[in-house]
Image 1 (cartoon, each protein chain N blue to C red):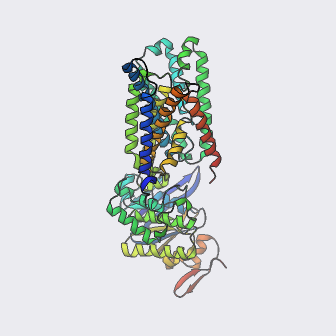
Image 2 (cartoon, one colour; image 1 turned 180 degrees about the horizontal axis):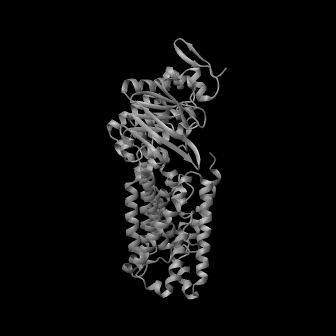
Image 3 (cartoon, rainbow over the protein chains, first blue to last red; image 1 turned 45 degrees about the vertical axis):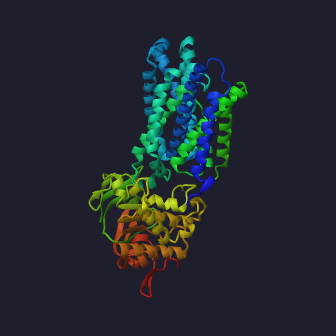
Length: 319
Length: 252
C-alpha cells in the first residue's frame, strides 16, 4: 500500500530532518567571530527560541485546521494572536506599565497563556458547528481579528505614551529581539503541548473524517475538540509571547508539509510541519543575517510568501 | 434489541419526530421508509448518538445511548451517516481501515488488517484499494463507506441511504450482502431506504414514518400493501406480486 524507497513518507521526513539539522548547524557556526563561548551561548538561546516558535506554530496550526476541517485557516488568521496582544495591552492598562513590568515574567506569561487557552476555546468552540464551512469561518476570523486589533489599539491610546512602548514591542513579529526571560516557560509549555498533541495523533486522524464519522468511531468529539482547542490557545500564546504575531507562517509550513510528506496522517504531518518550520525560521534567519546582511527581516519575508500561499490556496479551492 | 420510547425531537421549534415508541429486535434487516422529511435520518442519528437526545430514551441492549461512553458504543454499533464532507487524500484501504479504530485506537494489529481485507473483498473493493477516495465515483465512494461501517465489526449496523448513487447492479449486490451479513453473522441491520422495492425484497421488517410519526411497523409482507402505503405516503401505490415478490408500482 505505502510507497517505498525515496518517495515514502518516512524517507521524505528523513530528508526534512537532514535539512533542519543543516539549518541548525549553519545557524550555530556561519560567521562566528569574537569570543567563541559567548557567541555560541547567545546563538544557542536564539536557536532555542526559534525552534520553540517553529514547533508551537506548526503544531497549533495542524491541530486547529483538523478540528475546523480545512487547510486554509490558522489560529493567527482567525485572530488568536491578536487576542494575545489585546490581553497584554489590557494588562498594561489595568496594572500600569510599572506594575506590569514588576510582575514575575513566568507567572505573567503562564497567566496570559491560561487566559488565552480559555478565551480561545470559548470563542472557537461555538464556531465548530460550522466546521468545514470555510467562508463563514473566514468571515468570523476576519471580524474577530479586526475587533481584537482595534480594541488593543484603542486600549493603547488610553495608555500613557511611555507605557505604550511596552505594548508596542509585543505587537510586531520580530525574530531579532527575542524576549529571553520567557524562553524557559515557553519551551516548557510548547514541549508539554506538543507531547499531548502527539499522543492524540491517531484521534486527530479520525477527527479529520468529520464529527459524525468520528463519533461513530467512538471519539468523544466535544471533549476532544475542547481539549485540543485549549492546547491551540496555549501554543499560540507560547509563540506570540516570544516573537509576536506571525500570521502566515503556520499556513505556509502546513501547506508545504502536506505536499512534501504526501500523507494526511497526523504523525508524519506533524513531524513534517515542525521540521519545515524549523528549516524556514532557522535556515531563513541564517541566510538573511549572514548572507544578506539583514536587508530584509525574516518576519516580512515569511509574511510575504505565506500571504501568497494563502491567496493561492483560497483561489484554488474549487470542489 | 434497540428500544425507543417516547422520543420527540425538534429543531428550532419545528417538530421533526413526535412520540416515537419502537422496538427493533436483534438480528435481521429492518428498513426505515417514509416520504421526504418524515424524520428517518433523524431517528437513525438519534439511535447512533450523532444527535443529542432531548426527550425520551433510546437503549441498545439495555444501554442508554446518550449516557453510555461513546467508545463503548462504537464497539456495539456502527453507523454510516449520509455523506458529509469527503476526507481527501485517503486511500480506500485507509478509509475502510478507520472502521477498526474503536478496536485498536491507532495501532492496527494482524486481526484488524484481516478484517479490512475481508471487508474489501465483501464489498468488491479490492481493485480500488489503493485509489484515493476523492478520485472515486459517487457510487464507489458509497461502497467504501459502507465497507468502513461493516469493518467496525459491531452487532448493530445502521446505514442511512446506502443505495444513494449506486447503479442497479451494485444496489442489488449491496442489499444481498447486507442480507447475508444479517443471516450468516447474526448482525442487526437498520437501513434507511428510498426504494420501496429494495425494502420489500430484502428486509425482514419495515418501519414507516410520516411527518415525524410512526405509521407502520411490522413484517415486510404486512407493510407492503396498498392500504398501508397509502397511509405512509398519502397517495395510492398499487402493489403487485411477481414471482412471489411484492412490488410497489410507484412509477406508473
